[in-house]
Length: 387
Image 1 (cartoon, one colour):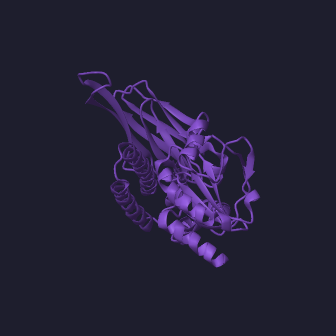
Image 2 (cartoon, helix red, strand yellow; image 1 turned 45 degrees about the vertical axis):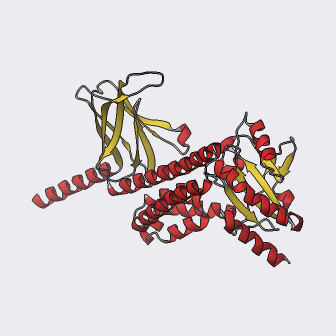
Image 3 (cartoon, helix red, strand yellow; image 1 turned 180 degrees about the horizontal axis):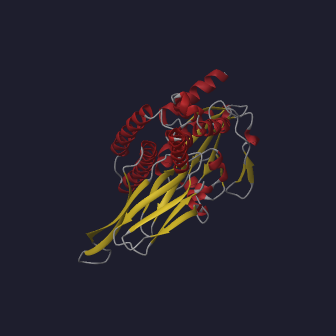
């Protein structure tokens, strides 16, 4: 009888443990937050997240959310009216701890002489589990890269406006990019045994870097991660993107030209095509334009076509056309005038510009992301082989 009771207790404890592992629990404290509401959101489109849970903060400034945990790791966002934090929902078997607090600091508002006290709200995870910590580090790296790209663009624009030397600005930008490269390599080298590292490879390396890099970092994952649901999803995305990277043949597309006609990619078959994603507001794009111009003038008569796909948005038609004329970009141009929502840019996973692809005469991608001397040398090789 005693053994039966022990077995029954063991079974109950095991069942309770399984039940706990199948649910998520988010517990938090919110300084002076009694009566406020926190929302848990998730979704595939960051611009259209869906609320899946919420909780009202109790009188003791605590709150809790509980629900079924997804079988695969799912990025989510916990939000208050003034703060937010990313987290990872999955069957970790441990609660997610959150802290929300307020900070008062002095700020000088526009048009004011004296600074004023401003209350700023913060939110963060407390002691996140290892998988979540890797996920968040990857997100921080993505944000850091975006900051470097945006900062570099503003530095180049400022240098052009003030007539400063671009060499010094480009040198600083290069140093920042090199530092990021080292951080990214270190991160990926040390996280191959974490399922959550697949999110950084999929959402950043595959979309903002290159197919070759994504494939390399996928290969570096441990067998257990590759066999996980997250690893299989990453492999599926890599295979789907293969046609838009070196060795692949991208699908045809058709977009409007500046004069209102339509032009398709496949109509350029039989020529070597430099597919150039750019925009009139993109300083690095315009800095690369003289180099592209030299290449175009050198090889256009031998079968080179340049197709500029502008990521200018609706209402910027005049800026797009003026930039073409001002900088003497005499090659073919198209644009959906939808900015970053351009369907072709999404098709090619363009998340930063300039972004360039070289297609051979059969429409296969033979090189990408080459600029400056590297781009010129590659074109020399292509047309030397054609002679």
